[in-house]
Image (cartoon, rainbow, N blue to C red; front, side, top):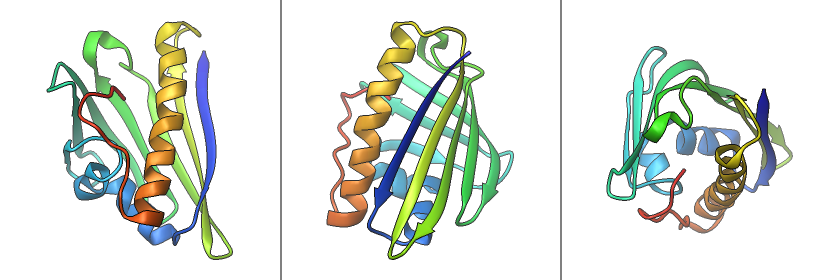
Length: 144
């Protein structure tokens, strides 16, 4: 199975990074403004793109503030991400935070996988910009 892996350093505390990843309000600043999230284990999340023509629904599997978040994609446009897992791991690095993202479970390294790799890279830089400068790059018309 194919895996998307990214690592980025963000000039913000792990607590701030965690809040940007684990809350709907945080996600609206860097990923999509159409975000709903019940931030508890077993809770649900829903992230809409392209005026909801593409929607990702997740189940919250793990929350370990401020170190780890894990979701399972239970539904996505055309089944693109169905059954995949998304994990964010945070570690302090001086006054920065090291963030690693792992999006696992792609059946093959196809166009959907390639698109996810590119888009996660874009969105992680949006997260970095959001936390360091106050404004992410999330646009309704971009897919996840």
